[in-house]
Image (spheres, rainbow, N blue to C red):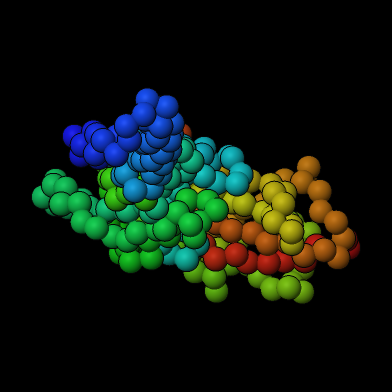
Length: 277
């Protein structure tokens, strides 16, 4: 490129015989050359040149402890699926999408299957990076990992893997009280039934007001590990407003290590109304 430019400058200078004209023309040519080189530099810093640097691997959100609300990290979801949540990559990495991969653990073979592509989540469509895997089967253990893809199609390495197993949930028709006008009894008792008890270790009961503010959350051990009816009484120190509606849910938890469960289920939300007798 520079050889062609030098040849062109020489041909132009040969047209002039006086030093004064040569100097003036050389100044003009030099200015044009500097301007064009500046444009070349600007273009090379733009989108025409792809950045080959891969983004950093995504990071899963730390799973919350049972007493914490709202819940975070991998968990059962009330829809029957498994809830996944991770951190956004830094803005400077210009992430275009996140890819989710899943592998199934086969208990009888003590073997983890291959990770297979599950879905992609465009970064432009999410405010919070999360996904509900609604294709899982109760009783199976699934492992998940992530990969980030930037706008230049560079792929990150895989994230760490996380695992969860969902159970069949408590059925809504067994939950009492349950109805917008159904009053909480004077004994402040909630009841439900659960028959799939093989791996259950504990319950977690959550009570919210109609604006989803936390009223109370507590861990309870099953009164029986052979299934059937379960009851739990709301402590007297929990204060309700008269004639207001509340909702409650029962979470099942199992495979607990260091306080965190790796298996469980969430019931649908039931409702009751509080009225002072």
